[in-house]
Amino acid sequence: IQKQDMIIVSHKQIADHIFELTLRGSLTNEMTSPGQFVHVKIMNGSEPLLRRPISICSIDRENEQFTMLYRVSGSGSGTSTLSQLMKGFTVNVLGPLGNGFPVDELEEGQTALLVGGGIGVPPLYELSKRLTSRGVKVIHILGFQEQKVVFYKEEFTALGETYIATVDGSFGTKGFVTDVIDKLDVTIDGYYTCGPAPMLRAVEQKLSGVDGYISMEQRMGCGVGACLACVCHVQGDDTGTAYKKVCSDGPVFKSKVVVV
Ligand code: FAD
Ligand code: FES
Image 1 (cartoon, protein in one colour):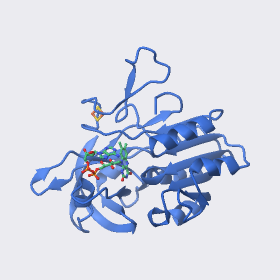
Image 2: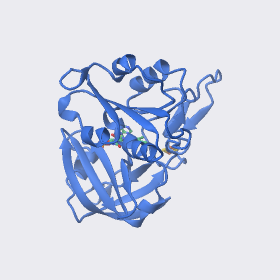
Image 3: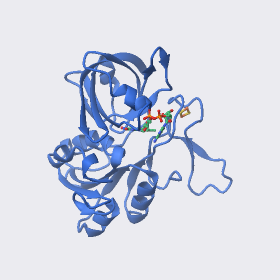
C-alpha cells in the first residue's frame, strides 16, 4: 500500500452528480485486482478531511493511469470539494486497498452475470474487461434511480450484453435489477455484484444456487484494518461476535459469508 500525489489527467461530469476522474502516477502499477479501492484525501482549505473510499473503475497500465467514478453527495460534502479540482492539480491517493473480485474462477466460454446498482456500478467495469479478456461471456445488469443518473451504458455494452433498469422507468426496464434477472433465460456460471445493501441481499437470495461474489460498502476510518469502523457480521454466527473488516477482509466477499 502506497500514498502518492497523483496528477489529474481528466475530470468531468458524466451524469447528474456523477463525475469521472482519471489520475496518473506509478501507484497505478500496484493495482492488481478489479474491485479494489483507493482512499482519497480531500482538503477543506488547509484542513484534511477523513479520506473517502472510492472504487477503482478502470486501470490503464500502459499510461500509468486509472479512473474512478464518484457521486457528489451534496453541497459542502467532501466529494463536492473533490469535484472542483481541475486538470493538472494533484490528489493524494492511498492504495490500492482491499481484496477485489477473483477473475480466474470462470473459464473461457462460461457466463458471468455482473449486477451493479448506482454508484456500485464502477468497479464492475474493470472486472468486465478482465473477464472478457479471458474469454468469459459477460451479461451486465445495471440499476439506477432514473435516466439522468445512468452512466457507462456504452462502455459496458461494448464488452457484452447490457440491461439497464430504472426505478421510475425513465430508461430501460422499469423496476429493480432483480426484475431483469427474472426475465433472463440463460445459465449463469457465476455472479458478481456491487451496490446498495438491499440490492445485494435481493441478488444473493435470487441467485442462491450460483457461486457469487458481493462487494460491501461501509463507512470507513483508516481503510487499512486498524480502526474497526467498517466491521460487518458473519452469516450463521449465533454469538454475534464473529465479524469481518470490509476494508481489509473485503470489500469483496464470497456470497453468504457476511451479513449484508
Ligand atoms: P460527506 O457527507 O462529506 O461524508 C461524511 C463522512 O461519511 C465521510 O467520512 C464519508 O466517508 C462517510 N460516508 C458518507 N456516505 C458514505 C457511504 N455511503 N459509504 C461510506 N462512507 C460514507 N462512492 C462513489 O461515489 N464511487 C465509488 O466508486 C465508491 N466506491 C466505494 C468503495 C468502498 C469500498 C466504499 C466503502 C465506499 C465507496 N463509495 C463510493 C462511497 C463513498 O465512499 C461515499 O459516498 C463517500 O465517502 C461520501 O463522502 P462525501 O464527501 O460525499 O460525504
Ligand atoms: Fe478502519 Fe476498516 S476502516 S478497520
